[in-house]
Amino acid sequence: MPHCIVEYSSNLESSGRIGELLEKIAAHFRTAPDVFPTGGVRVRAWPVSQYVIADGNPEHAYVNITCRIGAGRPAEVRKAFFSEAYEIVVAHFREESARRGLGITFYVDQADPEGSWKTNSIHQHMNKG
Image 1: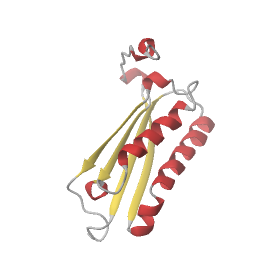
Image 2: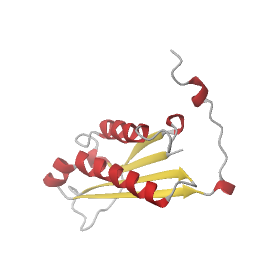
Image 3: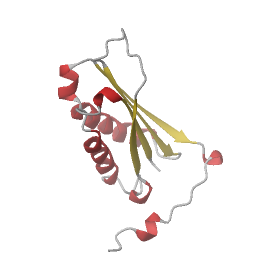
């Protein structure tokens, strides 16, 4: 962990540079390997094709990001790290937001340690060229 899921209205498909956003989010996680081990980073996205936003104007768009992390990181670490992550997202969509109505939400959930199971051999295979 962390797993970040970017859900976005499909009207952002051509202009939202979603792949670039995913790279930015993943890069941010890689700045804190002691807090979020790099081998556990998963960032993915999918467009939503059926939605109604606010007053129904089809030009409006939205981005909803949910990051799930393992329990145990101190609140002040989470707040600082994810405040920066949120600002990365807002900056990414600044021009898009100036052009049209755009709602951005960013949530962080902690996995219940008694309700999650994981297997990950990526750590052992990283940096093997």
